[in-house]
Image (tube, rainbow, N blue to C red):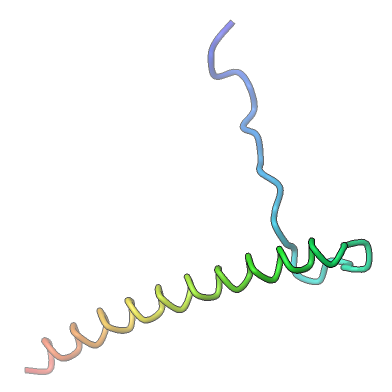
Length: 63
């Protein structure tokens, strides 16, 4: 019996876009909103970092 025969366990998604929300409690909705807001902040930080990198490269190569 090998150690790696088990299939990888997939973690459940926090939220799926377009999902029916009618079965969720208010606490569950609040938790999803918080998770999505945190993800938006993470995406905005990544965007800003990539934009700064791109701008620095453009500035360097315009010389």
